[in-house]
Length: 128
Length: 128
Length: 128
Length: 128
Image 1: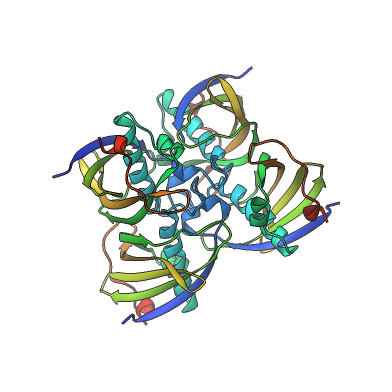
Image 2: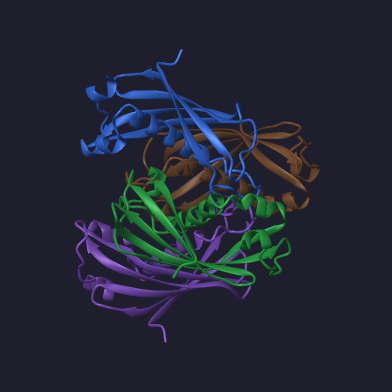
């Protein structure tokens, strides 16, 4: 069971579609990123604060399964789940939903590092 | 053992980096796409021909593991492997290499569909 | 004096920043596109309807002046103006505003074409 | 008459096309950027060196006129011209050429700034 979940709406931009008239598959990783950023904001924090503290969350694993195409102007919901929190990493899962149908699902692992790229513990204020 | 492999060089563009001064992780899926497209071209075919025949290869699965950052102006090699060929799908694996070090590796499954999105057999000329 | 104007909010995505930790300049043309799309939606139409009628708006001119950087997570307002409507084209002007300061301004000309790329008159429903 | 010019080849990526099956117009600004970067490299310098010296070239003006569509897999030439060199800025002009036909042309002004965003003189090694 997920530790937390959050819904974010995204309107598909023309620039995100490709010659197949569907959202280019790489953009789903960007949608996931928006999902986890907005989840953080929903909890009263921002990723910008994170960087101001000299910390960065870098993606170490990402995957996506595509079930149906998203098209220009579609209104999508990105549902973001926190699956697992480690000392220095967080695992999220995602569902991209259109009209109550899941059109894609995915998973990422982000790792906390400092400016020099060394792995660092997640800050306490994030874990609360 | 891979059925075939192909190397493609990619020079990192400024536009591909993000505020962490590294290539934004979503761009690796685009690098993989360039790798499999150039592999096809190396065999005397182009994906454009494919589309002219009314067929499309859509990505149904994609994943990537990131080991080290790629930076602006880096010269990368995308090594693309054909891992498995099914009746209507192809599984590729990828390594992104800088100075003989693998900085990322990944995997995609593409499925052959027609204009209406129905799954279709891969054309014979592709399989040869 | 502009014929009409419309405000759209855009939250800067991490993927839109570059190694200078500011929004990559090319993304402002995408912001302008979102501005004119949302202006259309605000008037009860969508660009998708436009395409369903076999018509496309292609950009024939675009320019942007950059006064200050936009950064990750900034909340921007894109103010879109209709400057001039011709038989087959529309000229828009744009201001990108953060905290009441204009950080960029620009202009585009879009031309109405059909599937074969021939210039076509703008549809009456759009002009109203 | 331009002070210098340089040709760079670019193969259109699938990710760069949009639902109109042509290169999304914003990508031409990225093509221009590749053109001026490769021009610099052709003269034995790289923009990375520039940043290592604590200097940045930020775009203050950009414009593009689009005459014909570029499509997936097209092989384009970006011809970059240095039009004018000021104390702290450079004006470039660009032509994007396919099969000896100019499909787009544009112009940018870049300004030299330091880490704090203050305007700085262009370094001597760049001017030579």
